[in-house]
Image (cartoon, rainbow, N blue to C red; front, top):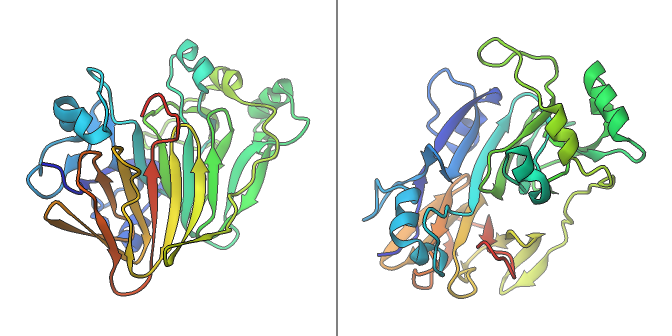
Length: 330
């Protein structure tokens, strides 16, 4: 029953969002809305992706995980277990709030979920920056005082970015996506964010958005003073080039670039996610041939037969996401 699965995106209106997901990727955004996030593959309470095409069209990822989670994951799945990753596109017309996600060691005590994520820059205006990590010497007391007087952004590093830049954000790293940037985001299946500062703006309801300084201070890694972008170095891979973006227990994310026919990225009975950053990639398996253009995502279930990936119309760049080696949750 398994074949390359594509899903209908779920659009999330955000005060800092815009309309570039339609401009860049042809996403059918609702008229008049400022869309900050397109949830492309998700299995969250109240927000589960719906299969877009093929025999499983209309079924949700939640249903599929419940009825044959082993077929997706390649291992037994516990009752109620959710798909482990959440994949998004983000359009930051304005700066996001300065924020942090709780590490696993403290998340439960704070009433939240841990969240580690990766950002891949798809578009950036000249001068665009990411905010990430605290500056050396900043103490929790100084950070709290600056959060109160509105100068806490001075405690963050500012990283200029362009297309293809990547930042890994382990839980506990303070950060914010800067204005003028569009990203692919691969993250743990979590939606816990503690805002430190929101630029004194009002939310979509005309009221200030809630801040969470106490839980944030309990989550921030104040030893994280040297954030850096992922190296742009690539290595040959069978006629293509590849670049390791994240090699973590939670996920292994790789960028692939080139033209021609490429191997299935899976290493046996495990799932894989594909996200096309540029060009067109066709994925053929189980009698199905799926075309993915820039901004499109697909899930290759573990039980699906070996797939063939091939570019059409020129070179392409895509990301593959696999379970991290040694992962206990994937």
